[in-house]
Length: 347
Image 1 (cartoon, rainbow, N blue to C red):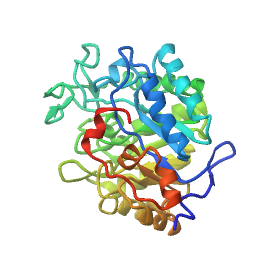
Image 2: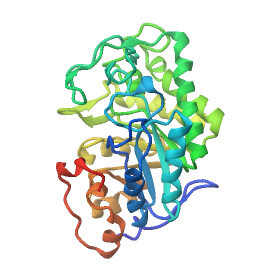
Image 3: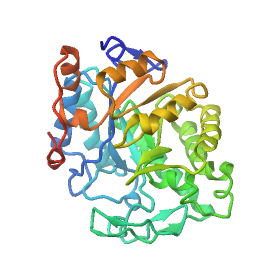
Image 4: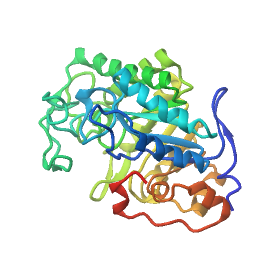
């Protein structure tokens, strides 16, 4: 039943995964006061590596203090932070598991409580609706990035990516989804700019493409993955207004600039109602590594691989609830259900 799911996959000349199981990025909030990875964080990831997960994608790691928006999340900006992650990577690498650092800028999904008193930055000056659950206040009033500031953001991502590779990470995942900074440019519901970064699809994808181009020029394309979430649940089904037209142009540009690893995320949503339907539509356009899943059963995951829709399958909450996930799958044993109390500690 799990013949394909547990089979090895080689994605380029330098990276081979021992199987097609991916531990998806999940925000946890257990970093120390200097936003470093702790011994508990190390043990948390090492437990999953011991179970033979093919790829671990870390919780979101903030690329710069001004990019933060959450309580106690790790950063990758200083050498102290890099060295703390180096220990985590070394622990994971004792097994055959690969590990990517997810690099994250929250944009307007923040508050100046988290940005050192600075206004959050975004594609727009419009404030996100709702309450920031991290500090129980309305989201901060953002400042729309100026034309001459785009490169500063690209440099932040590049600095963090360089530190990630110095720490020994096998790759980086650039978080372009879930309503965070890059998604705030891609999404016509948010991006109200009147300059070369807003309006048309070509303009709205410009920020993402320029960022990707800068990273590929700096660290090459073999260790870069991008996460997008064009269809997801946010208190109901939420999709980019012109989703398929944006995807057609975005993926064409991703391909031409050399991206070869893509994560279509649905967050905590039904795969078949969100990312799954997107994946079926774009698969012919995207012949490279494609990962996704999140909500799939083991049988559904095996079928998605067998049908050629996905190359690797992501699970978040299921792997949080079952540190020995792969070993249980190998033996055909039942998985423990996730419950919200599991968020309270690093099990």
